[in-house]
Length: 162
Image 1 (cartoon, rainbow, N blue to C red):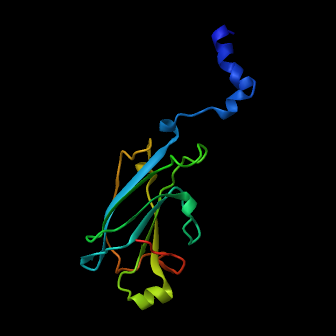
Image 2: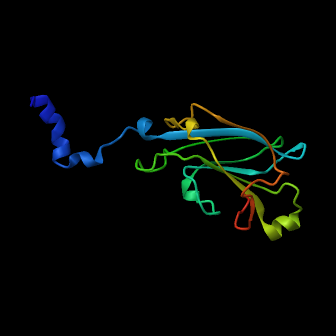
Image 3: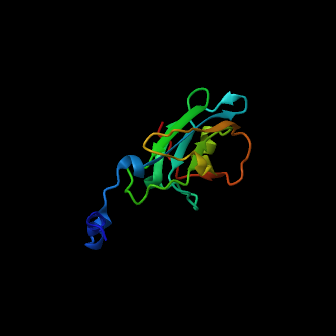
């Protein structure tokens, strides 16, 4: 065995290689999504769009896995981006998952009694890129929130902070 190869193996054999410092630009993953939310023919202002690192099977948003969050503007347009930079290097994989909280076609009493409507969508992993800035953006398109979507529910625990 050549001396150079032996020198390369020493950290692994001695157990020091288990805590290798991986550069953040290699370990980080990022994702971005944009679109427009409508309530009928009007832009859905004030909807909350959350981008999560991993899919959540239950109906509760695990904010510890939150990559980014935005509120839609007057036209209903949103763009949210996030990366795994704040996560440990063992949690850099992204299975992109988005939740939308809104009160389209609900009066304030309904929202107070039932909670905001919550719709969750898994996204294609093809749009996950390496690095702390997304190099691709998933175009969600224009979505009318007056329609009922599979899995849509009311979330009484959601607290709008816009």
